[in-house]
Amino acid sequence: MTGPRLRSVHVVVVGAGVAAVRLAERLAGHSRYAVTILGDEPCLPYNRALLPSALGSSRPAARLRFHAASWYRRNGINLRTGTAVIAIDRKSHRVVLADGNDVRYDVLVLALGAASTVPMVSGIRRLLARRCRVFTVRTAEDVRRLTAALHHARTVAVLGGGATGIALATGIALRGREVELVHSDAYLLDGVVDRTAANLIHTNLEKLGVRVRCGAPARSIVEGSAGVRLVCADGGLVVADMVVVACGARPRVRLAARAGLSIAEDGIAVTSELSVVDDPDIFAIGDCAAALGKGEALAAWEHADLLASALLGAPFERSPFLRTIRIHTGSLDLAVLGQPLAGTPVTLHDAARSTYKRLAVENNRLVGALLVGDTSEAGRLALALRRPWTPLFLRGVLFRYQDVEHRGLLPTETDLLCVCRSVSVAGFRAALDETSDWEEACRRTGAGTGCGTCRTAIERFASRYKTEHVA
Ligand SMILES: Cc1cc2nc3c(=O)[nH]c(=O)nc-3n(C[C@H](O)[C@H](O)[C@H](O)COP(=O)(O)OP(=O)(O)OC[C@H]3O[C@@H](n4cnc5c(N)ncnc54)[C@H](O)[C@@H]3O)c2cc1C
Image 1 (cartoon, rainbow, N blue to C red):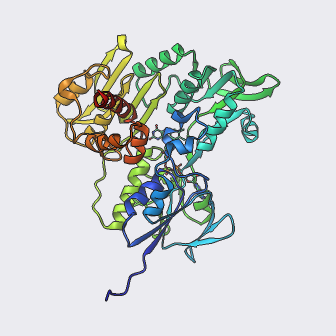
Image 2: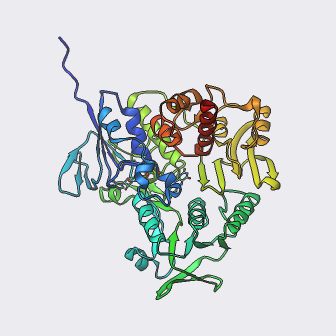
Image 3: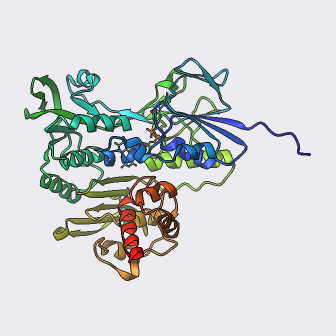
C-alpha cells in the first residue's frame, strides 16, 4: 500500500518566452510541482533573440521554437497558448483570463517579457497603429508581417543602430532593398562595442549598400503618397517606403501594477530571490523583472534557473553577468560576451580579413569578449567566462581563424558546442547521426537555441562532420 499522495504545488507561469520555458524545463519531471504556462501568443514558445535571423521566413515561430508540442505533453507541462491573462486576484490566488475563466495558483511566476520602445518621433504612434508603413519587431508575428510588407517596398529606413537595428538593416539589404539606418548616438552600438568594432560594422554595412546616419535622431515622420518622410535632428531628410523601429524595449509591468505590486524604474520590483517585494507567492523573472542583467536572453535563462533551484531546494551558483549579443546575417558576424569594454583589452585587428577580436581581462579572469567578423570562438569564450583560463587559451582564441584548420585546437568530444544548453560535441554528433539536417539536430538537442551565439560554429561543425562522414 502506498501512503497518501501529497497534492502537488501548482506553479502558474504567465508569459511563454525564454524564462518560462527554461523554468518548465527545470521543473519537468518533479512530481512535487504541476506547471501551467499561459502565453498570449498563438504559437509554441520560441527564441525571440533569434528573430532577426528569421527575416524572410513565412513561419518564423515554427523555425525558432524551443520544443515541439509533444515535449510539453510528455513532460506534463500544461501549455496554453493564445491565452492572455488580464488580472491577478491575489486574495483568492487566481489569475483571470481574457475569456473570463480563471486559473488557481499556489505559486505565480510573471515572465511577461518586454514591449518595443517607441521613440520620441512626432507622428510615429499614429503610423504604428495602422501597421502598414511603420513596424516594430518583438514577436514572430511582427517578423511575419514585416517579411510580407517587404515584398512591396523598395526603400526601407531602420531606426536604431543597436544590435537588432543592425541585424535587421543587414537582413533587409541582403534582400535587395535600399536601406538607410538612422542612429541617434555618435557611433553604432555605442557603449556596447568600442570604436574599432563600430567602424568595422559601419564599413561592412556600407559595403552592403546600407547608408548609415549617426548622431542625428529622427524627430518627425509624415506619410505622403510616395511613402514616409523622416526629418532628422540635423535637418536631414530620409524618404522611404517603410520604416522599421528597433529602439530597444521596456518591461511589461501593467498586469503587475494593476495587481498592486510595486514597480521599480526598470521593471517589477523583486528581491534577490526574485520574489516580488509585496507577495511571497509571486515571482517575476526575465525582461519584466527589475533584476540583474535584464533585457538579455541569458539573464532570463539564469533568472529561471535561480528560481527553479530555489523551488527544488537545489544549490545555485550565480555566474558572472553574461551579456550575449549575436548578429549573424550571412554577411556580418558579431558576438558580444560579458563586458568587453571592462578591464584590460587584449586585441587582434586583422584588417585584411575584416576581423577584430577584443578580449577583456581583469584580475586574471576573462570578463568579456568582442568578436567581429570571425565569431567561431564565441561558444568557447562563453564557457571561458565561467571557468579559469590560461594565457595559452587566449592566444589560441585570438589567432584561430574559422577558415583555417588548427589541428591541436579542434573541439574534443567533451567540449561544449552550446554552453547555454550544455550540449557537448559528442551529444551533437549523436543527433547528427540520426538526422542530416543541422537545424533539426539543434532542435533535438537544444543546441543553439539559447542565446544563439554558437550557431555559426555549430553550422560549420555540422558541415565539416557531414563531409568527413560521407567521405
Ligand atoms: C528582435 C530581438 C532581438 C534580440 N536579440 C538578442 C540578443 O542578441 N541577445 C540577447 O541576449 N537577447 C536578445 N533579445 C532579448 C531577448 O529576446 C529577451 O531578453 C528574452 O526573450 C526575454 O525573455 P522573457 O522570457 O523574459 O520574455 P519574452 O521572451 O519576451 O516572453 C514573454 C512572453 O510573455 C507574453 N505575455 C506578456 N504578457 C502576457 C499576459 N498578460 N498574458 C499572457 N502572456 C503574456 C508575451 O507575449 C511573450 O510571449 C532580443 C529581443 C528581440 C525582440
